[in-house]
Image 1 (cartoon, rainbow, N blue to C red):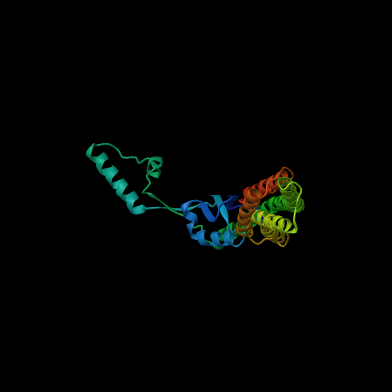
Image 2: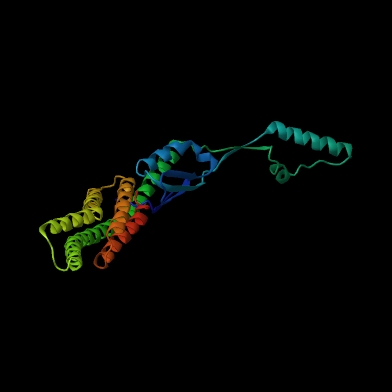
Amino acid sequence: MKSMTGFGKSSYTSDQFDIELQIRSVNNRFLDLKLYFPNELTYVDLQIRKIIQSKISRGTVEVRINYKDKRIPHAEVDYNKLDMYYKLGSDIAKHLKQEYKPDINELLQKNDLILLENNSLDNTEFTEKLLMITEETLNKHQEMALDEGKSMRVFFLESVGKMLKAIDEVEEYFQEHKSEIHDKLKSRVLELLNDHLTEENEKRILLETAIYVDKSDINEEITRLRNHIHKLKDTIEKADISPIGKTMNFILQEMHREANTLGSKFSTTNSFDNVLIIKEEVDKCKEMVLNVE
């Protein structure tokens, strides 16, 4: 079991490059992968996406990349333009009858005079190192997600235990409830008939009791709810690193429906607390599962 919440950070330093990469994620129903890096790195966009998607299937994931290129760029002088500037300066000085002495520092500040050859980042070394620390950062992120998942697993299993115990008690109370209904109805009828109960009337009482109990019977709800809980428990216990959040969510939706039906059909003084425990635990699990990948 993995959480959709995670964080990882890695860096790489050499004589030529400094690279820093962060991966941060929070919960989302689908995968929303956002990459933040300079335009020069767009050539690795697809490669980085494939790496992230190989281990993350759901969540809002932010990948941030910063780098520093420490290589000295190659520079050249555009001598044609230099000659042009010199000739213009000389002509102006001649026209003004002055001596022309070009200022080299001023010439160096002209953007069109110095040609800088941009060092391409699309080279084997930089790309290899960038993809390497992407993998490294993702592994750190996954370690955190799995650690969080272990805590969540403990929570879910404890919650399952509470619900199963509460269901057992509700079922026990319901068996007692059926006997109480029969006895109360029989007593009431005897009272109305002045303690004169024929065999035929007793059969009628049993029939009416059976009809009444059948309308409020919760055996189907208990059976379905117990099956859903065991299915949830099996899903959690058999989970590895595969995504199970959606499966758990579907099961919990069914549990929520059955728990509400159970509460509306059978709610006595004895059973109320246990029905409440079941509904509360289902709600807690529904909230927690939103962060399960």
